[in-house]
Image 1 (tube, rainbow, N blue to C red):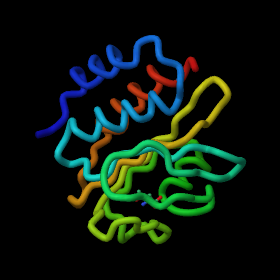
Image 2 (image 1 turned 180 degrees about the vertical axis):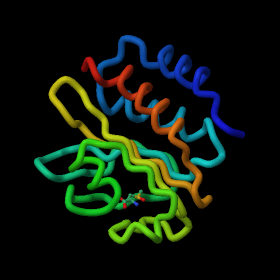
Image 3 (image 1 turned 90 degrees about the vertical axis):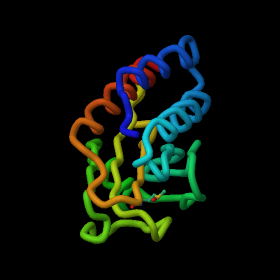
Image 4 (image 1 turned 180 degrees about the horizontal axis):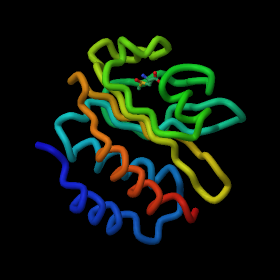
Length: 150
Ligand code: SME
């Protein structure tokens, strides 16, 4: 079933109200987003844990790579550029890091708090060209509502 973003945003707002712990928030979002849409086969966060380094955070799905430098992969590009990366075909993205061989397309959105970039949200799909511009903008809005004022 395709996600209903109005319902998802309302559920996340209710569940996270008053919470300020980044890991608690990321865990809740990974769970809610992952189970909202059958296209999402891996959903999780990589956190900026030292300059130029992303480390695995809360996620749903099979195991993810533990460490991704800003210089590598789709997640690294999102962190480095501070911009959402929508990759319709991971095999055409030369620097894609294949944590799972079943992944066909990927959406990675940078996560900003007051102090700046705190991580990225990575969603992988086993379907080719699974993500739309609407997925990107609706998820960017949800992330801003949860993290921007932390
Ligand atoms: N494919 C990502 C790596 C993260 S995993 O797929 C969970 C990338 O190229 O950044």
